[in-house]
Image 1 (tube, rainbow, N blue to C red):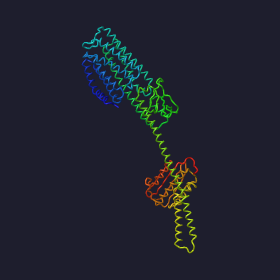
Image 2 (image 1 turned 60 degrees about the horizontal axis):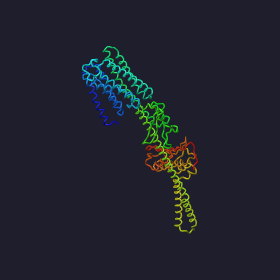
Image 3 (image 1 turned 180 degrees about the horizontal axis):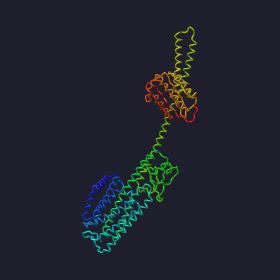
Image 4 (image 1 turned 180 degrees about the vertical axis):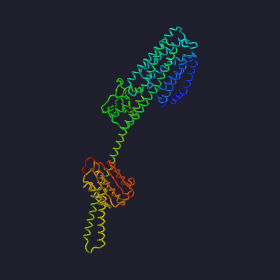
Length: 587
């Protein structure tokens, strides 16, 4: 997130950059600078400003863009070392020192823009002191006439030409040493870098090598006795070579951007809940570090575990490995042990860590949802089982209680009617006959009710016989195809029975059908029940509480219910119930 102060500063630099370029060019032109020198001022200063502003806008949290802008401003102030106003020479020398120091800092700190090592900071401090000392020596010893400048150097206190020549030679020696150090450190960094870091740093190394070679050759040749025109050309090419660096920085940032764009692919890949081994491979490929390892935090054991579930000690600071820890609300989630060279681009590591955190969080959430779904299924199964148990209890109570009483009542009425004599009152005889018929009808209805609550035939004879019984009692003629004699788990048999019972009940009440067919098939661990009629159709599972109840009952045992219907074309109800690889005896 960019702060308002940072945005204001960037806008100010954007507006001041062109003005400073025009002012620097005008000053150099007024001092008699050649066209080549003017071009060098515009190209080098403009390259740093443009590249720096672009990098600053794209990656405001990174210091590199701001440092490049500062280097560009310093480069545009360097012409102040010369005419027309030699009194401004200290500003130009100070700017020249700043350009060199900032350039070296940028190379050492790329791509993060932060110099972490003590050796690097010490090198910058020593370089700044040496370069400033050399430029101060040049300032107090320079004779403007030796460079073809008009005017007097107001800061000159050393008149000896020999001393001045020695100082100039010392400056060139320092430049060559700086170039050597930069080339050496750049080569070492490149060799030690990880894959993505090496790809990003390569353009900077190439640009630095090219600029260093041009600078070293030009500086060495210019020490000799060469024509002034050639010397001017060498110095111009020397200054112009510095423009290679901002180009290298921009190409490096582009490669970093491309590397980070690959994180989107990583997020997609990790979104598929990979195994620990696949996760480690994906992270290692994204970071270009084949030695990367992943550890997972175990709250139960209070320690990090490897993908195999064994305790794992994270590398210490002295082990030569870096550790990036992943946390959620202060609670550890996981840790990534990787090549410390990856810290040169902390943004890449942070992006990969975020992708992994997302993957781990998704895995955790999926596990929680799966656990909750399992609990819901188990709860629904318990509810169905409890309902079925209550049905069985009611059926037994009706059979052993009210049904037996009605049987006894019917027998008593029959006995009472038999004891009436020939001269019995006809009205009494008719009343006993009617009472006996009512008792028999009540017994039939009670048996039907008990059968609807829980069919005893299902428990005693199995699903096939129970379905045959339903078809026989159906008002609409129904045939049963593939009636099985196999026995299944009680929950499966009850669910299948009530599917057929409810389907035939709907056919009798609503379908206006002339016939129905029931099919039962057991294949590949799945029981399929199909009920089809030739009625008017138009059945909607959402409109009937009976069908919704069936759907709920089936889902509690991982079954499914589907209905295919067309107005005027009949209805097809299909239920699928998993029963496992083998059947079980009904209890």
